[in-house]
Picture 1 (cartoon, helix red, strand yellow):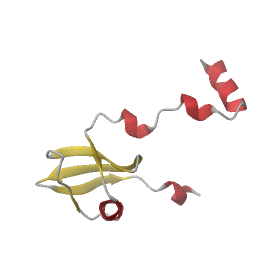
Picture 2 (tube, one colour):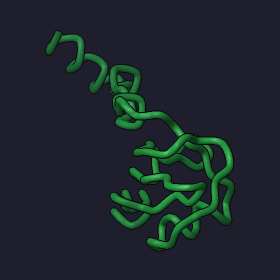
Picture 3 (cartoon, one colour):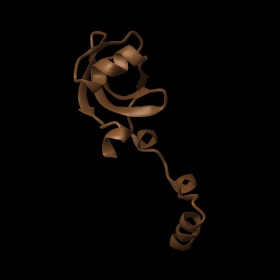
Length: 88
């Protein structure tokens, strides 16, 4: 309820009521290693071995990087989420 959210916010615990956006995406997930994540963030394709062709939610270490499209083992960025530190 809104009252519960207000109490959580007052206690500095609002994050317990929030669901990370990456968990809400109705897409298969692909996790990248640091080198692949760097390429993806910079708009370059990354080589992947496991996912099937199609759209995927792309993560590195639990952090949502964006949405990508896999075709023939290449993950091409479609939408890239700005890193958190960029918002500061």
